[in-house]
Length: 107
Image (cartoon, rainbow, N blue to C red):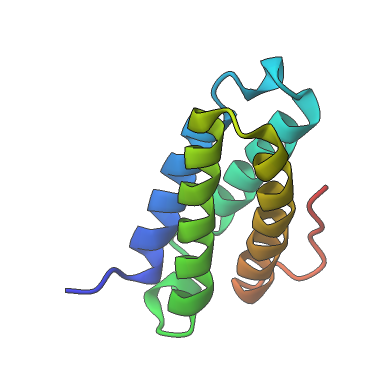
C-alpha cells in the first residue's frame, strides 16, 4: 500500500531529527533551520491535510529531500548539503503552507 502524506511526513521528521543531531558542530544556522522544520512539521502533523491525496506529492518531495540531506550529512559533503538545505527549506515551506499554516516563514 502506498504511503499516506502523514506517513511520509513522519518519515521526513525522523530524517530531519537525524540530520539535526550534532549538525551544530558543523554549522549552527543549519541546525537551527532543521530544528525549525521539525517543529513546524510536528505542528501540522495529524492535520486533515495529511489524510488527503493532495498532501502526497509535496510530502513525498520533502521525504526524499530529507533522505538526500541525511545522506549528504553522513558523507560529509557540506557543499552539497548547503545547496540541498536551501531546497529542503523551500519544500518544507510548501508543505507547511499547503497544510494550512499560511504566513509561516522558515528562516
